[in-house]
Image 1 (tube, rainbow, N blue to C red):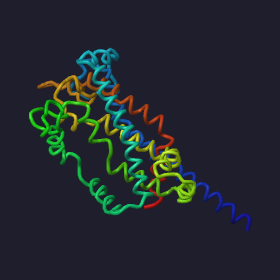
Image 2: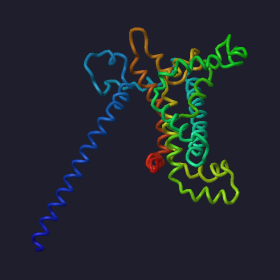
Image 3: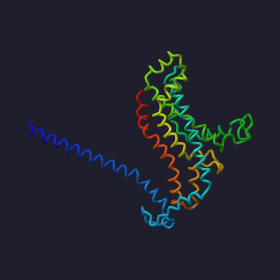
Length: 300
């Protein structure tokens, strides 16, 4: 009997080993496919101008031109562009974390008339692509009273167009962020806020002192997603911004595209530098990212 069990155990161990090796090969192949475009960007950023016009594709450059990075930043005021993107992203993310978590707490823990109907309207908002409402937003932002030369009726000037307000205020809150925070707060035991109410704590105190410190995973998740969306947003600033002084990094990248040619090596060099803040944010918050996604879906 022992002799019959040993071959079975060996066979099972062999199958597990083969399955593990197959998974490793598949994951390695997927990783390479995902990283290959990034490798193209990196190697293109250090190629010389003559190599960019060759008809035959070559991954590795013949001449490594690291001075492309300094040459790229001679096109325009990149210090100003980075300041604009950084300022807009930081203010938007901080305001979004506060407003989305506060709204999520209200929908998850507070009882008020029409709560479910209002939340349903927020969910409907997730189904509407923001590109379809850019024109109405443009009209609203242009018609802000007493801003940008407008009169009390919102006429005569440009309102909030071509200002930081136009790039920050519309993104301070969002349906997805509220949904994510609401789902997370549903997973917290009700005994916590019930005990706090017995001690005389008001709803905002419960939110600020009890729920918000527990919400680090979901807030880190929301911060990563919001930072990536705000920093990489190109279409919305393209519509709302007309002055070069208000350009974000993404708008500034189009400077390398001429009427007939594109300076691909300089464009890729500037693009590599532009993604560094996103990499830093992800590295700082990655340990909370998966936990936030998992815990926010425990209860509906």
